[in-house]
Image (cartoon, rainbow, N blue to C red):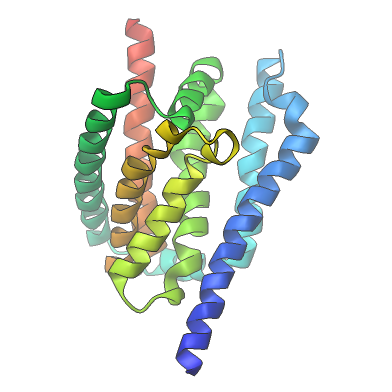
Length: 228
């Protein structure tokens, strides 16, 4: 009974971390929103990065013991585990995206927003999408729930769905059911990030997998923009 109560508390802690993630985003948008897309490129870049820096400071403070422990205990073989899970997740995500595109066409709203940001503010977008964002999200959606589940696949499924839902948050405003379909590819990728984390019990493994994925996507988009 005590074990169940602990897991419930850990699950609520995870949900609280996600809530905090969105609260920080809203607060930053309220106070810094006018500067995100400022005509001055440097000002816009600074304030776009500031949001992630604030998140890292807050999340890092809450989970500093976990972050320090995992950093000290990271092993070089974890890189291979990160790559393996990312590649499997990437393949599954691509299949899901191809199937969705064949029915509805287009891309997810989140993907379109990222492309626009990358085109307008490449420096801040590259740093936030490749380095800062993945670490914030791995702390929020993975590390915060680690002790809430006794089975790895339950942990992977639940955190993957929460991760996927966060990437289609516009659905909860517009109720565009076409956008809901993109829960599948985002959650599929999130499942393998969670698996990488659970296999090593190290947050930096899933962080690397996440970073590899975002880095590849950003570089491809930058190359396509140069060609176009």
